[in-house]
Image 1 (cartoon, rainbow, N blue to C red):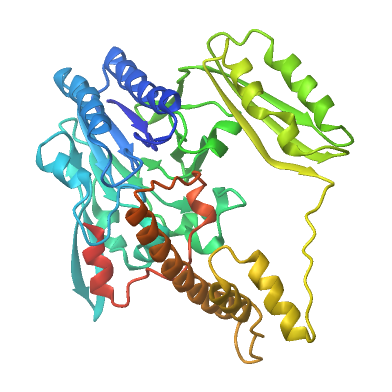
Image 2 (cartoon, rainbow, N blue to C red; image 1 turned 180 degrees about the horizontal axis):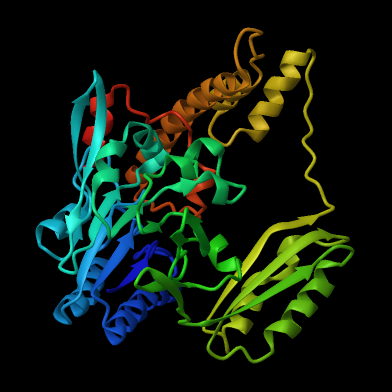
Length: 439
């Protein structure tokens, strides 16, 4: 028996960058082509096939065409949903593709009553090779972590081998530091006795084990965010023969990562240094330039990053300039006058408020609330986040309404999803609600 294990294709990511969007899809096609060449029996995709629950139709068309190549070669495809595939309250595109037999969803479940406890019984799919495949989907804000404590483990342990457990969840012992503990489950939460644990969600290649069985995170085939691309790790997937995993590297482009220290330099000298770097030959490469530090003199605008970017693009396949950590010594002074502390505060708010004084006043009021002595720190922080989240939702709805009236199309930078998750906001209130989300 030979199968492929991949995850986190994120087709449709980098929607604002056609070059990266195309490379991302090419990485997925290259992986499928390798599966065909290796004549695997089936492919497991452990979540986040698409970057959005309802991606653009061009991306859907290419994704389905690539999956059909595998099907036409006699390769079966099994999939669980990832946090990006999941759509609360609406049908995900994966539901449609599953119904159209583009792949088979490896998530089947029922709630059962055992000794007055309501448990989640995951039902297996049996492949033609005889292996049982059991899956649990990932949800937004890692809400699926609660499912693990309700698993009907006795039922899973009685399933005969060979069997594979597929999941799209972070394991505490393996997680990157930026993922909060509450968005992860310990290894001990995984059902025991499986022959292979096929993970997804962590954007890094990780090889571990549960007992004698491999526990594998293949990482993304290309990446879903600019932070992913900044990390220089190998990208690819695994081909597993007789439960012995072998990593298959996927390279659709060469990356050149350049760091430039601006500390103590003038805007003019920094510009000259960057133009010198941009004049080199980067044929066929994606160039990532990270500029950080504090300029000794001049303004950031004097560096003229537009001209530098265009110079890089004379030879590079694509260039990404990261200047978020570039600062200047020049500071904008806010001059205000007032007779009282309240008058001065009001004048400052007028000058710094982007979304209106009411918004700024309310935000300051929320963040200045002291923690009650009888409240835990985590509960206090969650309460503040809920208030801030509601406030931001209101202001964004207002701004979007303005944009729509003015015919504007506002764009936002892509950021790592793990860094913007609000912990308890979307957790289900009742056990049955959790199970309903599962499908």
